[in-house]
Length: 194
Length: 194
DNA sequence: ATCGTCGCATACGGCCCGTATGTCAATTGG
DNA sequence: CCAATTGACATACGGGCCGTATGCGACGAT
Picture 1 (tube, rainbow over the protein chains, first blue to last red):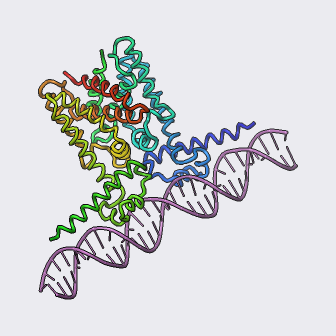
Picture 2 (cartoon, each protein chain N blue to C red):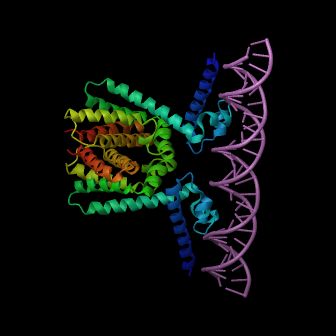
Picture 3 (tube, rainbow over the protein chains, first blue to last red):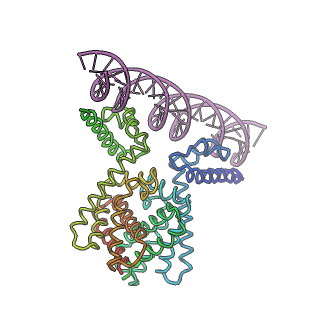
């Protein structure tokens, strides 16, 4: 069967992406050398260009993967809440929390937008944003949130959370700052209520 | 007098920064060639490294300049408002509006954070953030804004505005989207009121 | 068992950055 | 008024990295 070949191919692909996550997070996108990156998993640039086309393609693959992971995690946390509104708040808080991960911060929040452009136009469609928008739409229909453009509101909410996360992560005392950021986030979000 | 020499030096410095603003805005930081950039104003890389140390130093100088311009402009707009609260809202809206400028967007909002790190730790101290924080502190003392960490609230407000601006700028119909973004911003900000 | 396919390695050219060195004008001191 | 020095800027060099073109060897089809 042609299975053996495909399996191995998938494995090298996964190894390259894992190495990329580590290298991009540690050195930053620009300073990460493709030679070093591939050598770290016993391959060469040939494999990389075969799978991802170019350096940017590799970053896009990594960002898409991480974006999906973040969305899944936030969604799972939201599911555990009673009301949709509480779920929205919880997802925002979870988002802030996840951005404390240096890998997420550097790759998804800093280099991603700079290299790939506006997140809302990524192939992954920025899943976090999509779920938030949908939740807001429902909440507006139920009269819980005041009528606004759902996408605009989702954008601002996510933007606030994102910057809060950056602030927390860059702080010298992240654990002390985190609750302040989350409290301010909750206060801001209440501005959306009807 | 030693003046003549200093004047000429300042002029070349200004010419380099102007060329850098144009090149960084058009090509992006990574893709901007220092050879091309300096040649565009009739100089060589020698002048550049003499004045700014390295490529990053040039970006830092440009960002600092633009950041100061933005802060001054926002502050001027805020001054025209009757109440401090209105001023805060107006400054936020002005911030969103300014970020529609592709130069600001690319240099200050995208490449700046990616290359120089967290904006709140820039030498320019991100003047926008500073004024916002101070205004919030006063508003809290007056009981207009509910008690929160002023820096946290300022961070989130600015973050929301920033992302709104990116969204507007990346939109295919910026003029149609701008009012939606500004309305959503005002709604969010009301969450801070006591 | 042979041939084609393709995943991956190797080789090459070119761009760009940072530094070290050179040069010439302006300034200073006598 | 002139020589020495400073400093702004140009030129030259080395190294690294990316993208592409080419080569090879293994796996799968027939």
